[in-house]
Image 1: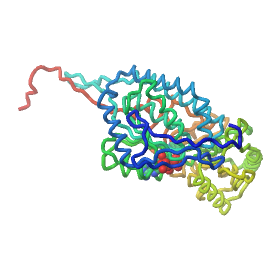
Image 2: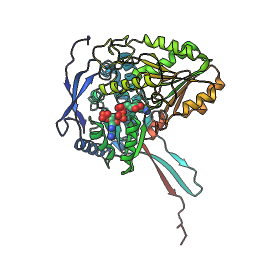
Image 3: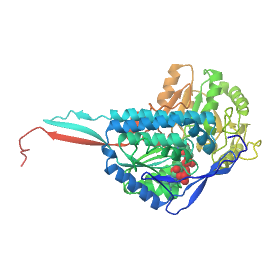
Length: 492
Ligand code: NDP
């Protein structure tokens, strides 16, 4: 759509038991385009009553057959979903970009990854294997893998459809049924995708989408006694609350939480590649990335040159309408996130030196745009170095030597990701072993693949998504012991 043309405000319904429905209260809430601040849609404001209906539908679908469908059939459904996502990828990418503010080119990569995720788990559905356990008796001991049951899935706004795929694909492959709650800011692409569920043969109730707010729709889902597992991606604060809420019903919980990831540059790294890697690590997706390399650790001997080169390039990053292909950074997702990032920019000015940005992007008269911001001479104990900002704000921290770098890097409550840049393989591998993080990149930062595990150490969460690790989180393990002796036990 050309810039300046006002989009139609569409009213969506949500999906429960294969039916498009309003919320029980009939209330809706607005969804925005963060580049114009205009309302682009209204979606149902679900509460406990709606969540109860969705969970009942998911339970019914699980008991009445989905849990017993053949792995081949589940796999084929996922392949059909992937095919449909690929066919409609242009529409999905444009909607994702408009609703979240992410540049269209990045949204296109996300949607391709969504399809790949469904394809991967479509294939994995037929590779869920059991074991024969070598017990020391005249018996056959088997291990069976069975679906956990009903999964409640709560996702954030930074990769809306991709986070949906990361949750739905392994759950469906495992034979679980789902109630998915998208983030209040970005429910639209998931709702569009749900339009195709009946066409691809997904029985009603297997996936239910409930739109609403965390406290009124998310919390009842977590507390519901008929939900067997909660898969959550979001902030550490909400993750902690979820663990407490889930305790009463002893639910399985997996948490993908935030980070304050170190991106470490040794003096011997390729300088051009390093500058690019530092910028990409922290500014991709407007910095709204859980694994953002927001603590940039640079060896003292290259530190001044590094700060200068990085800042010069950061000042040239093209901010703009997310739907334009040259745009490298769009607006932040919401007014709330804009205010939050702005407050960290101001906090940074009091505790460090400013090398680039530091404020609202003034050339835009509307939209939640902030400047890519770089602080240097940041102490690792500063607020901007300890707290997750979830926006384009980088803290550059000097270090002296290898042990100093690892010490600073590990001095964080988080442990989601880390990266290390050097041409010395020994130094790289020593750092890989020493860093306490769920992923360590060497001479890169951010690539994520459905074939490889994703998740955090420490307060970045527990459990793993993607690859075979992701499907395990939706499976129970049952042991079957078959006695091969025909005589009585003979104990009494
Ligand atoms: P939030 O934790 O605020 O929200 C995440 C989801 O949880 C939303 O759907 C939200 O609903 C819901 N929620 C909020 N409160 C509750 C509650 N009391 N009970 C149940 N559900 C609730 O995170 P953001 O949406 O702000 O996303 C940003 C955060 O997510 C960052 O901290 C980031 O690091 C993290 N993240 C982590 C990733 C990872 O893989 N480790 C990936 C992406 C993001 P509502 O719609 O009301 O907001």
